[in-house]
Amino acid sequence: MHLADLETPQLVLDRTRLDRNIERLRTRLAPFGVTLRPHVKTNKSADVTRRLGGPDAPITVSTLKEAEYFLEHGWRDILYAVGIVPSKLPHVEKLIRRGARLTVILDNEETAQAVAAYAKDHALSLPVLIEIDTDGHRSGVPPEDDMLLRIGAHLRAAPGANAWLAGVLTHAGESYNCRSHEAIVACAEQERAGAVRAAERLRADGHAAPVVSVGSTPTAHFAESLDGVTEVRAGVYVFFDLVMHGIGVCAVEDIALSVLCTVIGHQREKGWLITDAGWMAMSRDRGTAKQPVDQGYGLVCDEAGRLMTDLVMIDANQEHGILRHRNDPAATPMLPVGTMLRIVPNHACATGAQFGAYTVVAGGTEVEATWPRFSGWA
Ligand SMILES: Cc1ncc(COP(=O)(O)O)c(C=O)c1O
Image (cartoon, rainbow, N blue to C red; front, side, top):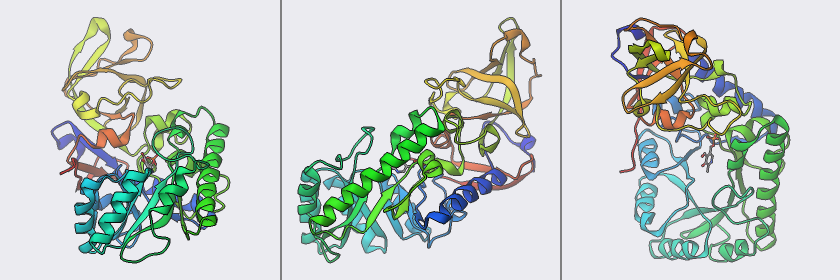
């Protein structure tokens, strides 16, 4: 079967690029002697995650549904990297009783107390990482804040049938706003130094805190030192996207994900091509809008994945996409109705989430597999 045989829109995954991207980060991190704990929220697929190392490899998830799905598919060493809340603890317990080595994260005393009480009452061995804020991006405790030690005091220092402090975690989310290679290097160093400092403070306070977990795709690719770090997390690196391209982490030709669509009409006087892939297919993500080059809803490739210079998806309705030449409407090629095109997305995680499966190709247009993926929370 070929892409031309499919009804559109479809989510196309180029396995050749996927494998190259996976190998790139693996090779990059090898000399640092750290564990890579991929974030599988980007792919939400056992077929993709198997290529990252298989069920023996550690993974990071962003929902308990992901934890559940990957446990069912054989993964056990799972870090749930969104702050835990007490109402989710029965679900966490269920997963641990079913064999998951699940670690949770938190950044406040109330939750630490609730987690400690729950684990004690249920004789549950529950490893906890304290989330550290190294760049003001989102959640976490600043490394120098004494709250860090107060949270630590609610947790046991060693493993056992209780909640125990396994270490610290940080995510350099501000790296997505970097505008140069040097800025990403600096961001990576800030991420590393803040996380290591927090772990050292906890150790000086009597905790073993063996785990120092850092990561984002930009900092994982540009960190020059990982001294004191034990594991690196990254998610979007497997697919890459236009946001990553916009900050210089990858080339457009590295992006493994695209949305296959069909030209359904034209507005010739406006220089528009209309397609059947709107924001429902691409997602509403306009992550490149604040970057130096705004890529609209995505860049346009032909059916075989070859970039069509300056053809951009400039706007989207629910099930309609509007394509036009970036600067000159008269230069838009008026491709006939029925032409198949592929749109490269701004944000791979968001676009992937619109679909229930990957249509897998290996560089060309022949379909070699269909890999299911899941979404939602319940
Ligand atoms: C806690 C955490 N770790 C790691 C990542 C991976 O980041 P990226 O997708 O840039 O690789 C994310 C992404 O949002 C995250 O929230």
